[in-house]
Amino acid sequence: MADSQQPPLTWEASATTTHPQLSSSLPIEVEACLKSARFLHLATCDNLFPHVSLMNYTYLSSTPFQPTPIIIMTTNPSSKKTMNLIKNPRVSLLVHDWVSHRPPTRAPDPTREGSPPPQATRSSLASLLLNINTSALSSISTTINGEARILDGGSGEEKWCKEKHLENNTFDDQAREERGWLGSPQDFAQSAGDGGTSSFIANEEVRVVVVPVREGRIADWKGGVKDWTLLSLEEEQDRGRYGISNGA
Image 1 (cartoon, rainbow, N blue to C red):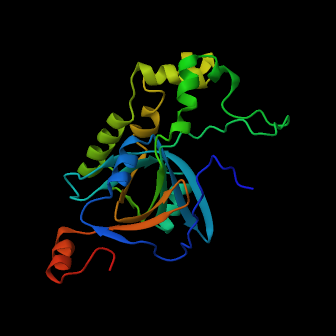
Image 2: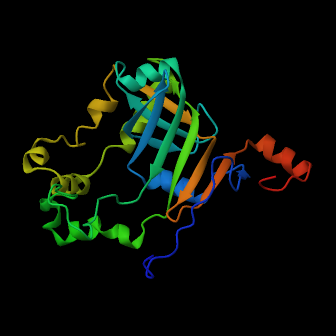
Image 3: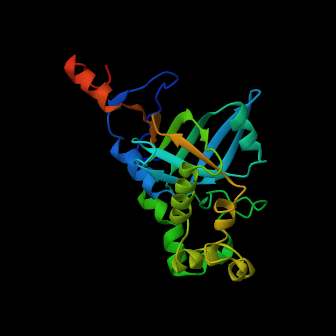
């Protein structure tokens, strides 16, 4: 019997395009998610074997090199994901800003320690932050499908994107204190001012990867699904000229 205190879930048949939304601007909830999330999941594939990586990223609505939204990431040139991207640039990105620690279950399992670690709950502020997902920081996640491009080493575009990416992923003292709550004191004491981020971004050997934001899917926490496509201004004008309604 379903818990009467929980809203009903509404799973949808979503194997094909579902509730399509076409617009010259990103859905508001997608842009908000891209601006607020800390990490994304990057899925690459080679020879039918998928590979998923957790990535720092930077979202920009445009750049001097591209007038439409774009996601910037960096990657080790000898990594599995880089090899996959060279062979197959098609990618899928998953972004959400839900707090994702695992709460205690109704039937405690003595074989698993759970998440977060005990030291993370000793601060009342840490406890508040770790449990804030009960009030739903965000109600959606978004999947973005597209083709990644590895920028030419030493190019003006690579230099510009790398600088913006480093700027967006260098955090202040508050973020390092939060790192101390969730990690060991030794980790906190040994971390660099940017938490070590610069070594993964500013290193000369690091490659810059960009993914234009063109289309994707929104999934809400109840199982609802909505597909979206970002149109160019020319495409949007053509739709208006021929009287095409959204989603038709």
